[in-house]
Amino acid sequence: MKKLELTLSLAIAVALSGCSLAPAYKAPATPEAQAYREVGPWVTAQPSDQLPRENWWQLYGDAQLDQLQTKLLASNATLAAALAHYTQAQAFSAESRSELFPQIGAGAAGTRQRQSRSAPLRDGNAGDVYDNYSVGLQGSYEVDLWGSVRNTVTEGRDNELAAKADLASAQLSLQAELADSYMQLRGLDQQIALLQQTIQAYEKALKLTQTLHAGGIVSGLDVSRAQTQLSDARSQWSQAVAQRVLMQDTIAVLVGENAANFSVPAQTVAISLPVVPIGLPSTLLQRRPDVAAAERRVAADNAGIGVARAAWFPSLTLAAQGGFQSSKWANLITAPNRVWTLGPELALDVFDGGYRKATIEAAKAKTDEAGATYRGVVLDAFRQVQDNLALLDNLGTASTNQRDASDAAQHALDLSMTQYKHGAVSYLDVVQAQTVALQEQRGLLQLDTQRLRASVQLIRAIGGGWSTEQLARK
Figure (cartoon, rainbow, N blue to C red):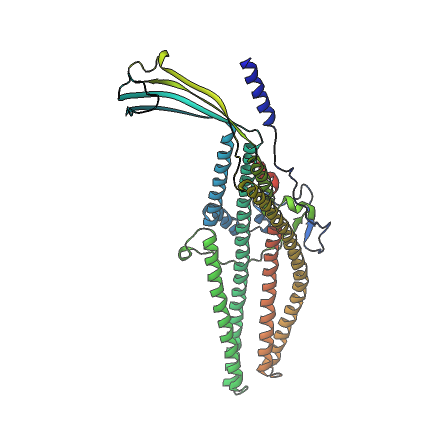
């Protein structure tokens, strides 16, 4: 009869262990567009036309950028901290999974004790002082009647996946920051080269005015104007060099190098603007690691509601203990000295002053907070993509117009210099043409840099080469 009762109790416990008090999970709804508004230097991505999964920056075809990105992955301090955080989340997840299994321990003790002569139920023939030796095993297992343990495991697993997505998001952000800084550095290299060429041209112009002034053809005012232009160009060159030093130092920190010992060789070869494959807006949620992290946190907090609700119901623990106990060490492990205990323990909090109710309300509010955060992250993701698409589209038009302006300004400068040599115009006309030509040429270089930076931010906004499939990989 006792065996039948025990079997029935275990069967009921197993059946109840299939219960879960967590709400059925569904990702929060978010507004989605059917298409992006802008059109420009990108194509609609096909299944076989995605960004490189890991090395998306290879679209720019720059070997130096490739080397710097490799250094970043190996040495960046922020990325190392994010990896350590993910490792912690893995450990916490493994810690919660351990609750699914019985806890088994072993122990041994040897004590000398004295008991009170007035102790209740004391055997009058027993001595006051005696030895107590014991050795044994003990085990316990909490039957997951209401899904508390399984929901805790689910919560830990979802937090682990969120931390993994956080790591991917941190990596993508740092890679994009490095690529963005690199584009600025290369833009400065081009501006420095332009200013060097300009300085050489202005030096020739100064010599020309000095020669003409020596021959009494022009006044000293022309010499002063030529000298002013040359000095101003040299000043602009020094400012650009200073900006390059600061940008180079920024890159040094990103790749984990000491700025004092780090340098990037100058390079003036233009980087081509890549064609970025853009998926539909509906696929963005699967391609952004920060969106995935926010969604997994909603799922984790939803499981936390189940854990809080389970506290209203009794917990069942199966415990067993066995071993040997004796007042003498000799022959401790013998059949007469054997002891054991076996039995279930049912526990229920009867009164807690509203603690459990407050815990449930807090868990629900935390889930609502995570849901609102998720929706905000999604909306911001759509905005970032749309902003950079619009930026690239309009900067492309601006670049075309700027190139025309630069060509026209250079033509005007060439004409003014020719006319000045023949005495047809004053040097003031040359100065004005020089100023406009340099301004338009630098403006064109700055626009090209802006377009490259916008393309980097667009790639970052669509998640690089990342996808939610990577969350399932260990």
